[in-house]
Length: 285
Ligand SMILES: Cc1cc2nc3c(=O)[nH]c(=O)nc-3n(C[C@H](O)[C@H](O)[C@H](O)COP(=O)(O)OP(=O)(O)OC[C@H]3O[C@@H](n4cnc5c(N)ncnc54)[C@H](O)[C@@H]3O)c2cc1C
Image (cartoon, rainbow, N blue to C red):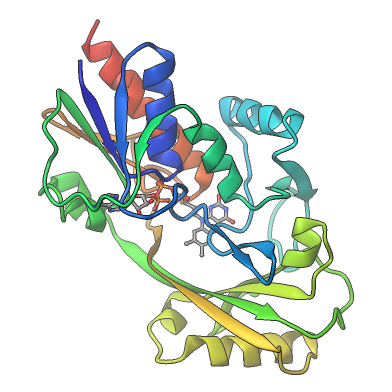
């Protein structure tokens, strides 16, 4: 049985891990030069910054177990259970000392992952898993389930200040704001207290010409800060899907998985990739 997984985000890596752990070889093809997808961290100013997902949450027992293993291995730690502007009950949010992407790298260890390969047509295999947003999967195969998904963009702004001139906060949900959706204190999240804030935009702001400038201004107004010394932006054309149903989709020997199958969270992507793998394993019984 030959399985090819396209996409080395958390869904694709969880899928390949499940297959390999069950003794089925899986090859992972990823277009980027690194694994992780939207579980993204970059080295900026000599330290890790989370530039995609802000934190992890877990209410599924299996994913809670995954987080506990990462905690024991020193890769993840509970960060905060309350963000300003939070609606609803306290929820433990997890951070990673070396950035959230380090968790994807941990999953990828000993897997057969080829980086820098943009896949443009269906690879030859007994089963192919497209582990990515539906609009990206459509560039590879015309899947009805991919066409049915609906996605919103977002921009991440990484704001570096001369010093920490704000009162400590973990993060803020900026509810009903035209520019910002969240602001997180990356120095507090990382544990090094660097004067770095990471803001996520609204979908409307992501379409504007210069979101970084407007996001820096909005963060300044929100927290009473002067201008940052640097502003960097990262664009996510497919940041979050409308929550979908099921755990994955299948058309013939092609499987589609990712965070569109449930609430748009890392946990959903991980569960979806694992479910696609289990379906493939069952089909070989
Ligand atoms: C700004 C932002 C903030 C977020 N905040 C949170 C949060 O706080 N908590 C949370 O739980 N979730 C958050 N999320 C969502 C979370 O990041 C995703 O749910 C999760 O990372 C999705 O994983 P995935 O594997 O399904 O998709 P992705 O991470 O998108 O992985 C898809 C992979 O496929 C690759 N790929 C695509 N096309 C091809 C191709 N043709 N050939 C080869 N490879 C290809 C991509 O490069 C990518 O690596 C956030 C997302 C964004 C963008």
